[in-house]
Each structure stands twice: as structure tokens, then as C-alpha cells.
Picture 1 (cartoon, rainbow, N blue to C red):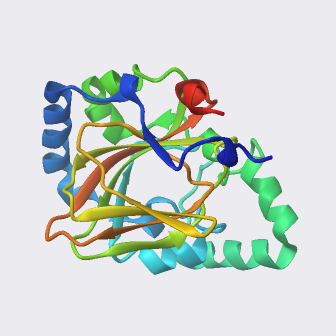
Picture 2: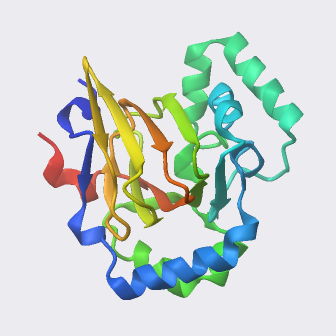
Length: 233
């Protein structure tokens, strides 16, 4: 049985939530970095070979600032090369694609994103305070922006046994909703800034931002289930 079936679709993780001061520091960070957000294709070309259709469908309104890089990403990949990677992976089949996702030498493996980059180091006093709260090993860390009046298409990322996804809303309001599809039910929830949420990305999910304001979140992938062990049935 996949781990996703033993976990809720989402849950607040109390020991990871931010106090008012730390949230305020993170808000100032977002304001200063706002012009540095780039499309998902520009930031994660190495990963888009697996999720290329999804990346193409959301990159016009889904922006990121990567804070950690893969230890295996030693060259810049163009968007044209990204499409070649996608075509090659899908031609060679699902098994080959999955083998690259878990290959320690592959840029497609999220657990390899452990190198703190220049942007992280510029704001290390802020980000370190957040990372120190985690019990598991942080890997891929990023700031994410979803444009006002836009959405992220329904999709499935990965089972929590591969990586645990945590998001902390920074700027968000009640008109930005997260959707989860579980069997014949659709769950709808809004997230509160400063709270830390586990997302069960093994289920199909989407985000619709009905608000007139952009939504900003701190998003992190974790190796291991130490931070959500109390949720596992």
C-alpha cells in the first residue's frame, strides 16, 4: 500500500509553524525578491523532462525562486533541451523515467537538491530559522508565486514515501483555494499565512487563486517522514 493512503490530504504541522516575527521577516524577503521570480521552466529545466506537460500548462502564472540546487546540475539546460529530455524519457518508457527519478546521479531526483545557492545564502539568517525546525532532511527548497486570478492544473506529484511536501503560505487570502481529489470526493481548503502544512501530493490536487492578489509560499521537500510520523495511520 502506498503511504499516501495512510495519511490525510493535508494537515497543519504545529512544530513547523512560524511566529509573527519570523513571518514578518519572510514577508520582507518576498518584497525584496519579487522581481527575481521566474517561470517553472526557467528555474527547473532539469526536472521538467518528467513533468513537461504540467510545466508548459502552468509556467505563465506559476513562478519560483529556487533556493537549493541539485548536486548533479552542472550545466544550464535550455527549454529546447528540456523538450528533448521529455521526448526521450517518454519514448524509453515509464520504467526508465521512474529509474531516473530515484537515481542518485540524476538531476531528476529531488533528494539531490541540497546545495544552498546564492539567493539562499543572501537570506540565510531567515531561511536557517525555518529549516532548523524540521526533523527530517530538507532537500529542494523554493519560494513560489501564483499569480492573481490564475490556477495550477490538477496533477499528481509523488507519493510521500518519495519525499514529504511542506508549504508555508507567506502572502495568501481566503480566495485562494487548494483542491484534493480522493476517490469520488473533492476536498477544498484555504491556507493561513505562517502555518506550515503537509500536502499529500500522492493524490491529485490543484490550486485556484480567485483573489486579486498574488499568493506567495515557502515550499520545501523533506527526505524521511519524521515530521509527519504522528499523522501516519
